[in-house]
Length: 247
Length: 218
Ligand SMILES: Nc1ncnc2c1ncn2[C@@H]1O[C@H](COP(=O)(O)OP(=O)(O)OP(=O)(O)O)[C@@H](O)[C@H]1O
Ligand SMILES: [Mg+2]
Image (tube, rainbow over all chains, first blue to last red; front, side, top):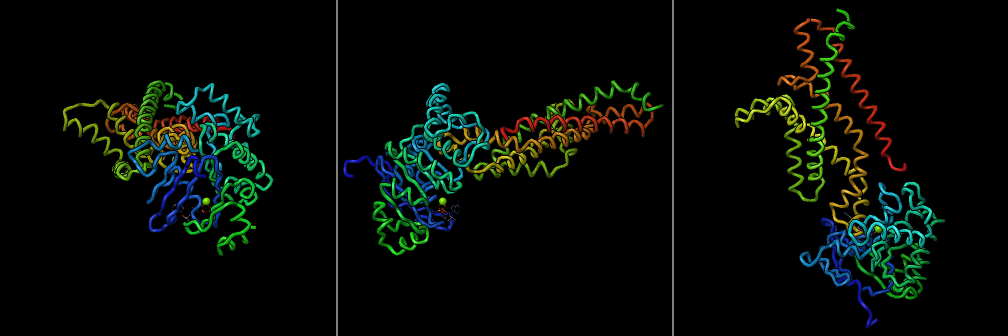
């Protein structure tokens, strides 16, 4: 742990929507290559926490440092530059409906001048191959199944060559038979050393892939540790209660 | 005189006037689209001041009848500034200011109809707000907006007739001139009504075909 590279450092993070305080002082550190799974009941603030990590939500108080950039310090940096390095995958895929699959993947690298059209196309086809969807390059999102959409969304995020990937319940909107294909892609990413923060209800995935599991409830971290510690031998009553309900 | 005789006698004159009407409508709508896009974008901005500016414009225009706006631009402004506008320019300014306010609402509704996740996904990749708008949100919003834009085109086409009061030679003005000569009030207005009807029906058919064509992959 000591000599590892810290990718995400969250200190005393607070987030309110109006009078509703959703995050009440979160402290999290994620090192390079770690896979952190975030679990907790609905409404506990998991999505909000994840969205603070790439500043999709405005941070109310505390600090979030990603890749050395302090997201709460407005003067220091351009948030778009930081986001180029953080991929995000959403529960509802959010593929661009006006673009076909390969255009979805190529848009950001080309617009941000990371790659020429040629390079982006080549890279896009590689990524589609990786997620097993080469033959769908010219298809529009509306013609894909949920599992296929989510795999394209992962490929789209990877096209920017991010160091960090955030997943917000990537399989919750999928039919059960499609969950496996998406988890497999994520598992391969983890194996290849990607730093990942994953909000999930897939306890099997958390048990097998996570380096660390965080259980949160009502805007605070209740318990954290290895999958073994948190999922097999939970200590806090709230964790035990939650796990009894989902397992 | 018979309908046929009236058409033979005045057909070319009225067709030219219809051409001017369409030209005025088209030019006004192009400017209205620019105005509408501008105020529509101000309206969906997260900056309160921009929203207020857009709403003031929209409320002002919607609160004033087009004919008053046209008189103001054609007669009022030259009085105050000494700059004389011809009827075409004054007509285009009045119509595009008017239609611009409605287009702004169409643009706002179009953008707001697109799932927020589209903008968020684009931003999460590092794209700027402007690029995300241009490449992802607006292309989808425009598709949603097309029926309303057709509708606005038809409204503006009909509104051009109001400009007969400032002497612009559009179709209604041309009709008045002909009738002053031949006193065929009933038949002439019937002919003019049918001309509007044909053009408007044709335009909405063309536009609807266009709408089908740009519905991507659905
Ligand atoms: N934009 C918003 N405005 C106001 N309240 C919000 C907003 N986003 C989230 N909330 C509230 O914040 C709380 C936490 O929401 P969040 O989406 O982070 O929960 P979650 O843990 O991801 O839940 P789920 O498992 O259902 O996705 C909820 O009470 C929610 O209603
Ligand atoms: Mg959530």
